Image 1 (tube, one colour):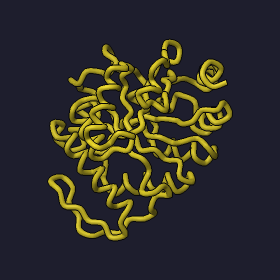
Image 2 (cartoon, rainbow, N blue to C red):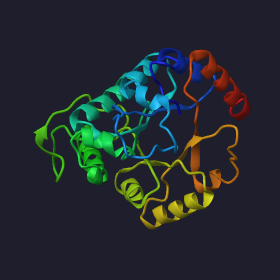
Image 3 (cartoon, rainbow, N blue to C red):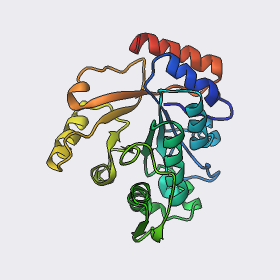
Image 4 (cartoon, helix red, strand yellow):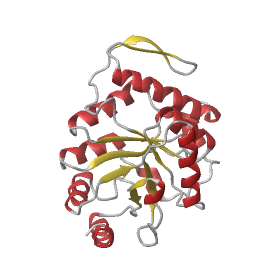
Length: 268
């Protein structure tokens, strides 16, 4: 998991470096912008790090990585579809899946920055419900030749949208977050869970709950782990099949050195 900015390693260098070292996937976060006046607390606490302000568009980044790799899975981690146009986003995800030969993973979240959401003309208090409707609408656009959707926040009559994704029925939707709303989203719209908690009891509780909901086999990705301190004991037993390690944003030399250290410890 790496923030890609105008000051970090370039996507064309990052993708091959990950693939050469045996990594499975790349998760890239997104922000359309960061409002100067902000009351929402930074997710890391304290001042908001510089890289949040400078992210390169996530789909441009992943398209470049797709063009320079052949095996690496290409993931938004996370995208913010509540803030996005539903048609453009559906087309971008499907196009990424097409040009990569079926390697796209669509990681989504409601987002922490309420002011960012408000600038997109949506009520931050309703961004979760807007996200849910947009996910449902995109699935129809991906899977139906003549798709229509009529909801509270998304409404359109029958429409054509191509390309269709390579993966069937569509690129897997990875739902971020551990709130009750996020878990309902996982149950109703998700294909995989990507929490940024590393509490095994939380994983056990969610695994049990998913079983009660008729979704016992949802894969889990432990998201944003510190590669220096992460202890893998017990994670496979609760259905974690991937760990996405946090890599500090930096220039090419620093990132490649960090990737070498992570690969030496965890892959080779």
